[in-house]
Structures are given as structure tokens and as C-alpha cells.
Image 1 (cartoon, helix red, strand yellow):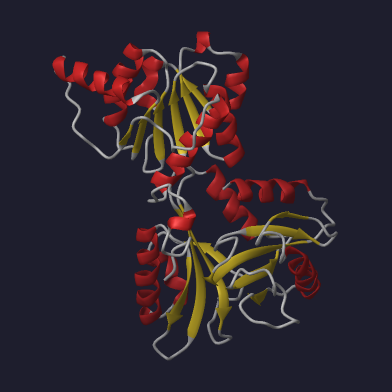
Image 2 (tube, rainbow, N blue to C red):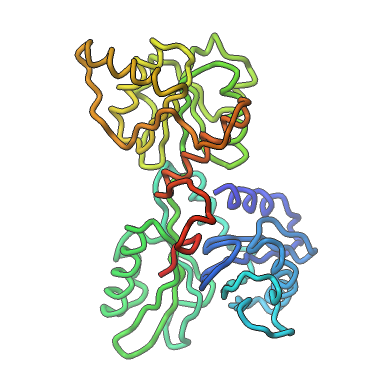
Length: 369
């Protein structure tokens, strides 16, 4: 979402006479620095925002975008970094992947793609599903390469006007929604026609709720801002500095804890540095549906909390959602390093990963179909 926000801001800031195109990674086969859904906004004046690779494909995409803009026609480009071809962009990079990039000129009079992306930024926390036509037969009325529309169920596919195609598309789209994964799909019509769609599943950005007001909250909020995540600080407003008001997305008084929105991308971090406060907050955080509840401090401190809560009639059942001590074991000592270890563990848990060394991972870094 951070990249989309930067693209929207750049589009809004460009001069009216400047033409633009949007490059989107719509398929990845094998290894690639960026995955499906990576984007860059390319202007005809040679500037761009975002990225589709680690910097190796952007220059060629710029030239291709200028051509697409001049022809007012979307184009699908395939970059193959697996072949030993001196004329292939990306050779020698060692990525060993095939990347499809859709480059679509943006209609200045009706920038539908921009507005659809903007709506994903401004809507309440929810999973957005966007469908982009990457290839369409000329015989399919009403669908053209580059078209983008929102998916809200089978009724969103009425324009396919073919029961077989709607059923085929719905089954595949719903499967990727369940996985929380973006991917290309092929839609088959009853008469043999084919439309290829890029299914983009965009869950809400991670939301980290920080229960504390000490100085080590600040580096954590700064890292969350750099990532483009959402941060909420639960603290007495009279005990925090004005700088924290401006840095965090929201500041909530402890009495208003129940007003915090919680979903499958929410993580709680208990870091009050006050035993009684953290002990009171632990059962409140675990009573929510948040998949991650972390407690700062040594294990013995949390064990004491659990023991006292049980004695007081509030036993805490064992759960994988609780992470205490919080953070990955990276040898962190400073507040900044501790913040890094905390955010890394949250990212790992929300991604369903262990947070171990990649060199020990037997499977590819990214899941493949």
C-alpha cells in the first residue's frame, strides 16, 4: 500500500500536460526481486515512482512505457532472466525468473485505474480484490487488455456474459482470495475463447497496537512509518510528547481500548515497562482476535504475570498467539535494534513464516504454484 500511495501522490502532483503509464508485475515464474502486484508509475518526461524489480528492468520499462503512451495502447512485456541470450534484458542478473509486466497508459480524462487504487487507500480496513485484463481475445466484447475492475463476488463478472467463464473465473479467484495471494488466472469460455486476468488480493496493511508510552515506543513507530504500516499507541495523552502525536497514526487513551479496530493483520505489543499495566493489558489483548500478542521483557516476567492472573481468577490458556519474550533473536540491545527485532517477528508471524535464516529454508523464498 505504501507504493500505491506514493504512485497516487505522484500522479496527483504531475502537470496536466504530462502523460503517464502504469507498469504492473502480473506474473512471476521462478525467482524475482519483486512479486506480482509490484508497480511503477512512469511519466513521459522520464521520471518514475515505484519499481518492478531491483532496478534492472526499470530503464527498459521506461522506454516501453513511452511507446505505449505514444500509441495509447497497453502492452504486455515478458522479461526472461533464465535464458543465456545477450539480447534479453535482465541476462546476468541471476534472478532465474520470468516476469510479465503490463504497461498501461493512463487516460487523463478518465483515470479509472488511478481512482480504483485510490479507493483501496481510502476505504476502511478490508481485503481488496482487483482484476486486471492482461490478455483478451478481440471476440470478447467489453473487455480489453489493461482494463481493471473490482471483484466483489460472481456478480462482478457479469460482463463476461458466459456462465462457463463466470464459473471458471469465480472458482479460481476465490481460491486465491482464500490463500491471500495475487496471481494470474486463465478464464475459459464455453466456445473456447480465453481471457487472462491478474487477480490482485490486497489485505489490509499490518496494524500494530503499542501499549506503552516510554521512549522506546518512538523508534518502533518510526520503523512502522517507514514500512507504511499502521500504528496505534495506547497511552495517557497527557503523558506523551507532541512528537508522538504526529508520528503515530492514532493515539488512544487506555479507557478507550475497546474502540481499537482489530482484524487478522493486527498485532499487539505490550511495552509499558510497568508490571501491573502489562498484566492488566495482557488478557485484554488476548481477548481480541488479533493473531499476534507480544510482551516485552524476560520470560520470567511474563510467567509471573500468568501466575498472578491465574491466582486472581483470570487464567490465560496456552496459545501460539502470545509471543513472550517478543522479538527475533538477533542480539538486539538498543531501542532501535529491539524495534527491528519486534517488527521482524510480527512480519514473520503474519506471513506464516518462522523468521529463521533464509539459507536454512529448503523451499523457494516465495511460494510458487
